[in-house]
Length: 274
Image (tube, helix red, strand yellow):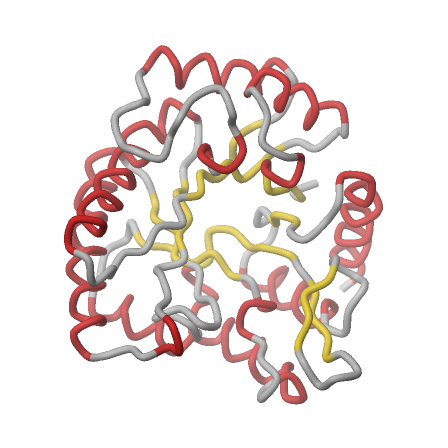
């Protein structure tokens, strides 16, 4: 169906070997973060990509019947160090330019965090400027920037992302939704409302989803576990996803290779029955 996986869950490998490995598991698509998943080249600085290299990477995945559904570009977009922020934006723009050659319509991002979540109004303004600059590049290449709200990040809630989308109205912004990233110790007992609110506010903008699981351990701390092994309300999550975005791609997270087929079957089975 529509369940893929984070490519780097197989470890950092040469891209030919990585594509063969993913294909051998019968997984049809991946979210690819090139500097986390591919070991052939150093992608920590902008400028390494070329049309030839990108075509070769994409061809290896295609030859193994795996598509690249999402490129991941998790970079700090409001870094208070101007030089670091400018380099991050240059790296992000490079991924946007080459996304069509990768065959990926979406570049996903969590926007960044700082210690103790000591966010200021200026951080929001800086993030907004960065996102405006990036979406102008995305519009040139026909690519969607999928913003993922994640606890601890400046955009850490569905409400915060809705506010940014309202302030930056572009059809080239979308939402990568991971309900697990919205759950905290404080709201876990009220998780149904958190999940419902995310779909109420962002449902029409969802372009892809992630799948992890969450639970509160015996110490009262929140833990991330493999999908289906925790206490997140997957039935509600997948029911709302079916209603809002049928056949939307789901990317497995926090899953070992030997667990992937079981988890993939769990998600597909539940999704077909809600």
